[in-house]
Amino acid sequence: MSIGLRPFWTTFAGGSDSLKCGIQDIRRPISYLHPFPATFTHFQPTMGVAVIETPPPLRKPVLQDAIEKADVLIEAMGWIRQFRDKITVIKLGGSVMEDPEALRHLLLDIVFMETVGMRPIVVHGGGAAISRAMSEANIEPCFIQGRRYTDNNTLKIVERVLAGEINESLAARIEAYGGRAMPLNFNGINNNVLFGERLQLMDNAGQPVDLGAVGHVTRVDRLALDNLTYAGQVPVIPSMCETEDNTAGGGERLNVNADTAATAVAQAVGAEKLVFLSDVNGVRTDKEDAKSLIHSLTATAARQLIADGRIESGMIPKVEACLETLSKGVHKVHIIDGRLRHSLLLEIYTNQGVGTELVADETKP
Image 1: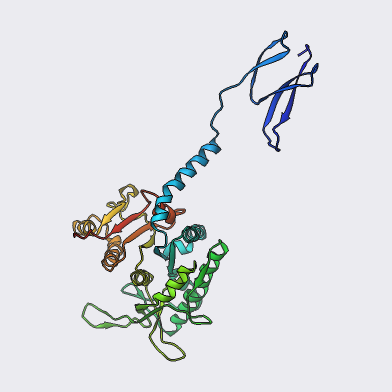
Image 2 (image 1 turned 135 degrees about the horizontal axis):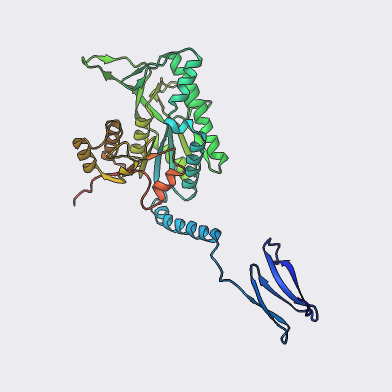
């Protein structure tokens, strides 16, 4: 460096924090810069220049990540176009409702779905929150044939927690994440969309079972739901219904199983998809082995697996409910693990999905 050259450091134009190493000939005002890192190999005194060898450029991990994200978007594009303007009913409930982070990702997925042109409808339960509120009120929960016995005091708690606090909170969070949502409940102006009657069950002796104010849905206000979804709003529906009554005070309010409420909504609106969020990743041939997941099942294949005993007993009622839903016009039913981050997007907008898709048998012409 004693022959009139000195090393120096500079930065890229535009404020980059990447460094450049340069060799400047102090006898002339011209600088020769080369990106760092570089290897100084030798100096040619007759030419007054430094010869620098540069390693071949390496693809940066950040760039590779960006390319992979672009590939995911391209894969999703076909599904986005296919499901544009189609209704998907999403049933929220269970442990997902008790996991704030999992619930946040699911609600973000719902906002994304609406943003790219799908028409999501949310139907939700809230059993754990209701049980907590009952405990605080010193009321012991009682379940009969899987249904919560609902007396007058329990019904007040169900309406306050389920149709009030949870319903309003879910809609508010969707809006906070950039979407538009409409809570559909009995608070203030009654904009309920589910109507029904008391559920009648029989015991083993063939006698009617008293469940209290427990009902099932017989009618869904499809017009109201269509108007909301076409306007770009996400309807958020609690699993409660009201008996048909033309009086000013409305009918009797009834507690409804969230799975059956979601099924009724999907059937009424002619949904493309109904998605059940579960605590497992779908239908497995071995409940202890997540790798035994079945990604796609026809109705006939599902019935055969049940008959063969290859679907574990705890999943059979949900699969049978899915089959009933398919028989009434819903095109596809999905069972996914709602605790998996962005499980909704991965199931709907990727080729393989992350859960089980049940589809109706193809009808022969």
